[in-house]
Length: 521
Image (cartoon, rainbow, N blue to C red; front, top):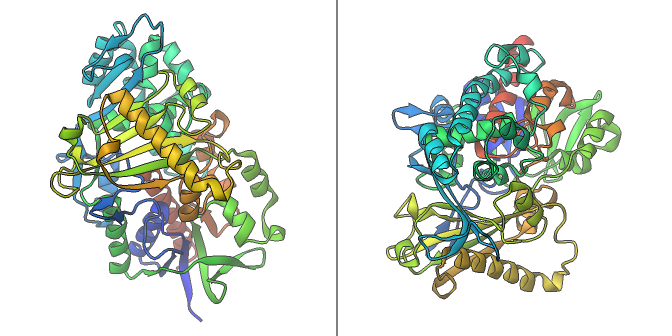
């Protein structure tokens, strides 16, 4: 009976990176995926004349052509061939004015707004633009980026080990690391003396991690900002499915096996730890070590009997809060972006500039909060001639669908889509509805069906201050349930994001490779 060196459960981003790393190191590697294609959210789908990107807004860490970032470097190291395209701005934040707002002004779209911030790439340029919008904010912004530069190096060192030793590698870059990790984003920006309005603009990316300013770890948020502002964002020319297929090829080229349509329905236990898996309720496959890209909630409820689940793991899983869920409306338009009046790739539209108020508004669908992306701005030929595609995204939390009856589902999702479209039309003074050729609406149940996560979250667990990256990294080894079974993906230390998932999979694989070498593999 063949026994694989490593079995990876789930071909999401983390699982793909783990399988590619293991296969390149010469391990007999089996990657199991319940769907018929790789990537999870990193995929694409077709409706009519349009091929849509399911989830990737933009990917930080790509870098420039002559200065590669951490993500493009990882793909190069794996031997994965990706045609990167790059976006030369960070974001635009538009906050429509409320009645009585004394600072309101009419923007270029002819809309009365309280904030309209189009932010550039580059620390100096970003800080100067912020100072232009909010006089007196330049110095505090540059101080923040100074901290992020040191912190970026510290986080890389922190993630190298699988035990507490990583903290000692990080301290030379950031001696006051442990003291600062106890402060929220709001507290950190306050300490730097950044004006409140500038803080609001600076905090725009909070929704990419699902945690607002009064909960988010200041230093972790600064690494997010650092990555986006330093060299801008990028994406694959053929959408995120290109990423998944490129890694699929690496795995196969290095002798690894990938079995699609192969759902792991249970884990075979022996002597108190995993020994194999059952596929589709029938076939048994055995391995020495396991890397799991599935949600821990799913593992403890469906794959491993409660009697074999470590009590500590169950307690930790129950203590954590499920992170944000997404709702996305995909639109194939029979007008070009110029004809529609779209001038930016990524626009954050919010009912308030304050991230905590945005978070509160997002507890239910919409609430005036929406991110609108136009892929044609970065990849002009991603749709047929004289067309374009948009996708509108909002975030929610917890079980927001619990009051929706099955018979009302279609009517409900159509209303959600209409509200998001109207939010964008009003905020940007454009018309969308008359020119929609194709529409697809994905609510949390849609993402739950594809991702097999609680409430459809792609974010894993909420990055509360007590459970942010540094505590999770320090606790990493103790948080793994068995000595031959490691989790990877959004549930782990870096939380959500394509780059975070790839790094998580790579780390899990490196630990697995080292353990097998130590055992004499």
